[in-house]
Length: 196
Image (cartoon, rainbow, N blue to C red; front, side, top):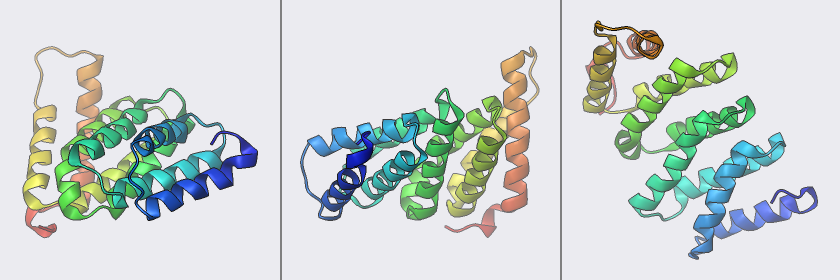
C-alpha cells in the first residue's frame, strides 16, 4: 500500500472486499495497518485513501462490538501521534466517524471520544488540530442523547472544581474544561434541546 505505483490498485481491491463484506481474518490486520498508515504516511493522498477505507470498514463492515472497539481505540490513540500531519489525519477521520455514525453507536462511544478530545485540547499545540478538536466536540455534543450529554457535563463540572494543589497538568485540564464548557453552552445550552 505504501508503494506509489500500486496504491490505486491496492485501495480499490480493499474497498471492493469491504463492499462485498468478504469475511477473512487477514482483513482485520489489514485495517490495523491502514489505521497506522493513515497517520504515519508521508503522502497526504495515502492518508486520505487509508481514511476512506477505514471509514468504510468501521461503519459498514460487520464487526463484533469488541473488534469495533479495538479499531476505534487504535484510531483514538493516534490522536497523540508525534507529528501534526498524522494527528490531523486521525482527527479528520474521527470527525467523519462522529458525523456518519448512527446516534445509538455514538452514544456508546461518546465518553471515550469526549475524554480523548478534552485531553488533546489540554495538550495540543497545533492551531489546526485544536480547531478540528473543537469542531469534533461540537458535532459530538449536538448528536448524542440527553442522558449522555448530562454525563459529559458532570465530567466538565468535576474538572472545573477548585483544587488544593495546582500543577501544570491540573491547570491544563482546568483550562481545557473551561473551553469545553464554553463549546457545550454555545452549542447545546439546555439538555432537553438535544436529540434523544
